[in-house]
Length: 308
Image 1 (cartoon, one colour):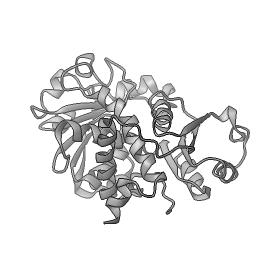
Image 2 (spheres, one colour):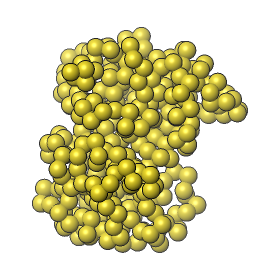
Image 3 (tube, one colour):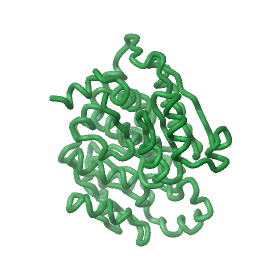
Image 4 (cartoon, helix red, strand yellow):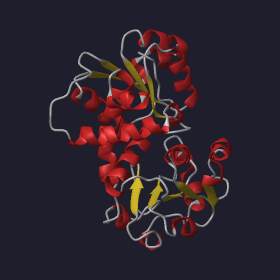
């Protein structure tokens, strides 16, 4: 079986990306017992705390018949300075798949290079591919294929924004990013996106006519000391009722959570009829089950689809 990783969304083909979305929808709707990962073990390494990532991966493995092991830095020799390469070589001899939620994207890249088993990026400072699988599943469920649609990203050009840029190219939608000066996404992501992505300063211009509006917290984990500075920089970038009224009539709103009501999003929008954030959060479970099946089961529907 060919060893596959999900370090970046570009590790998938557009066909595989769409296949995982459809498979996630099928697994969500299924009511039959299905345990293709019986006796398989997922090793989960967390440098950053988590609610949705930990629960969705652990529950997903159990529902597919397998098991998951949670490890923080204080639980492993990584926390005492063991080289990443050595940990990857050892851990991958004992488990069937590894998921890392870590600060540095380079950590996941090194792990994947030295691992005998699939490695999944559960979040890094550069990207959050698993969240995009769930986001796109949610859009497909509510509005159908996203190809040809317009998406507005409001706020920081962070790891989530980078993954939206990657997804725009893979799933063929336009992306308008409204962010303050100095908080743009990395130039390398923009260069690969070409004219499919625009960086704007005016949130209203980005939101006008959009089919999907997305935002994230202004200060991510590890940026707490910048909170006051960021609050000043992002003033005017809140997704509120006035802003979302500029979007398409059937536009929906997403946020990867946790959300800070009254900062990047108003309580009225987060709890309002256009918000799909609770479906989006639940879909982390289903999208990751589809991903685990794809990576660990040679005869998985997505692998068969991609082979044709």
